[in-house]
Length: 159
Image (cartoon, rainbow, N blue to C red; front, top):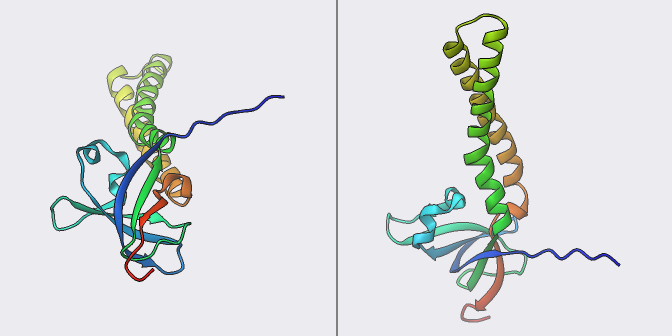
């Protein structure tokens, strides 16, 4: 009997639900900005509030948290790594591949090696950004790549 064990590492943060978004199954959670925010690739999904230490992030709400509930939000580390690769590494790999292809083709067709290499690298780099944009939009629609509420720590008064 073969069983596959999948270990999921979660990046977690505590916050307070500030508002619900009707019809989407999501809520906005106010959290304190930490040093870890600076290196987070998902920081684009968060909104700075007044330039201070508070941030607001939209999170999937499958457990029914309501406004003023204190909650724990989590983001899968593997999803974060995939998104980071797509945003930071993939375009560089494409640019290098384009430069090498341009260099090889310049020898084959007797063209200016530097000019053709740079031009090819630029074309591949631009194509990589188009791919990142398309793939990124698809990934943003999946709950796997979005923060989720995993636990309600304290219910609002009156619950």
